[in-house]
Amino acid sequence: MNDPLEPVISTKQRPFPINGQGTFFYTINNVEKFSILVTPEEIKEEDSKPTLYIGLHVDKKRACLVKTNNDGSEELLDEINIPNKNEESPGTEPTVMMTYWFSYDSSDLCLKYGKGYAMTETTQMSYSFFKDCKTQKEKDETREKNKIFFNSVSKKYVWVYSQPERLGGDIRYIDIEPTFCFAANPLTVNYPPRVMDSSEVTLFDLDMGKQMFSKSLPLACQELFYNIKNCSLDYPLNPVMRLSDAIRYSLNTPGCLLSDKIAEKISEFGDLEETYLRLTLGPETRTAPGIPYVLEIWPKGHMSPVHNHGGACAVIKVLFGRITVNIYNKLPNPNPKKSEPKVINSFDAKEGDITWIGPEWYQTHKLVNRTDDFCATIQCYRYDERDTIHYPGFDYVNTSGKGNSIGAFFPNSDFSFIKLRSQVLEEYSRYLGGEAPASH
Image (cartoon, rainbow, N blue to C red; front, side, top):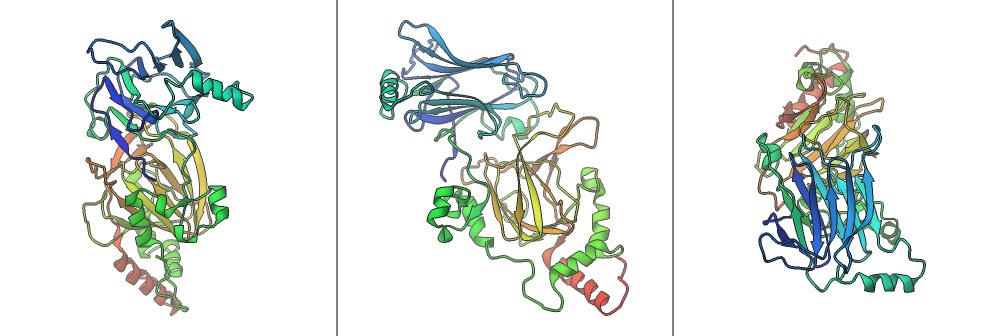
């Protein structure tokens, strides 16, 4: 995978990085309407507008896709209007910082529009110029008719029309993301969230497309994957006293190290069930938000809040048990909803499974341990090679007050791994010998 976002320098006009295709992102607040126009014309006059274009118009009530005809008139291709109260709004949201995206695919003559991350689940409108074609001949004729817009030879320019005024506010939302940026590829399908070692891929795996292959990950994720792919919790093996048994005993026994620590952490996010343990591994290198490698221990029934990862890349391996991963769209700022954000995808990861996070893929999630045993994961973080912000924290949905707000969590550590291992094994050894747990 090599699909980084490219910042757009001009607010007026910019060629696509690849002729005839790409996804355009517009992150803005305090805007009631805007247009994104794709044109084969290079506009040289400052106050001129393109006369030949395919475009996206968005206002507070609707979003629509249009194209100009030979006589200069604008033809409506598709539109979506304000929905009922149970559906997502297609229009602008002037009171929150929002990302609007427009995918332009010259191979399939397909246009897509959505809000937040560019994913199948966040797509609100999709239009194919081939929708009424029943034969290959009709497709060929349609392609020829629209070749001025859809070809890989001539440059296409993106022209933006709006009067945006970015409001002052938190640096996380003003400076961490550019107002305009490109991804080189259009949205066709989602990248799979689970990772498979490329050295083990078969023809069946290639055909089914259910796994992300390790060599296709962003470079930062590749480094993390190969560093931790062989890590295990119960290493070195001890047939008499496994670390997983000692952790379970310490979590479930009042007066033991992990049980007491979990009870202390209720104030971190305001809910006892939104507590888990973070055990750092190795030094702080400034290559990630916090220490790059973290062992996390999830008691049964416990979970994280909904949170993102500061735009960083990440790889997560389940070392013991099973965890549910809920995926969410990008968090707006401020979060206007009083309930938890909507889950757009969810899957279970079992022991040995590895998942990944990119700046625009699976960046916002919630981990939930729904099993009757604890779960252990190793979370690994690294800033993307094109990341120039290096934001040091994670943003999460704070549900402790009236309604929801976006809070900032700066990664910390409950213990080092070496300290945890020695103390819980000592506790478990005393238990096996018939001694009561020592107080901490």
